[in-house]
Length: 118
Length: 108
Image: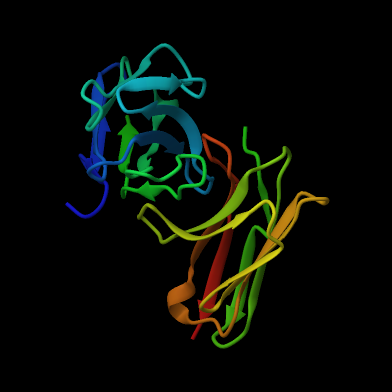
């Protein structure tokens, strides 16, 4: 596809359930980022991959959050034992095509997954 | 924590007027980027200004950067109803760190 694709678009989970959110980045993009956006706020960084390597996971709020990108393309963000405070929009972005510096490359965002924990 | 802070938090103008949004950031940067977000959608990249640049134009957008004051501004000229959105600045280190945004409403 032409852009970053995220699924599902909406997810309702009961407190305590596990969820998995998927991100399909733009083909060939080296870098992949996950952000969490609360209502009325800016995106907050969660974690970052360069190819399959997770280079920074300092933004993950707890050990209930886990992300992977095993083959350097599709990524999954997993949240175990969801809590109400996990309710937010989870945004995925990719950047850095062939020959492009990842340090000066704009991010291409998907439309996000809106997670509601009841 | 968020690196940048946009000002104002909300702005309402008439169609045809200019809209100015400001951004302050905390640490040194390689570049600064501005993004737009329509309701219920992801962010869309608007413009990138490098740390050695002072001003940049793209269509109806004009961005300035003052590294001595750690601030940037985004000017949208001749605004249209379709410009209604939230606008975010982001510091150009990896990972990008976003501010809280300015919610712009352009009234037709």
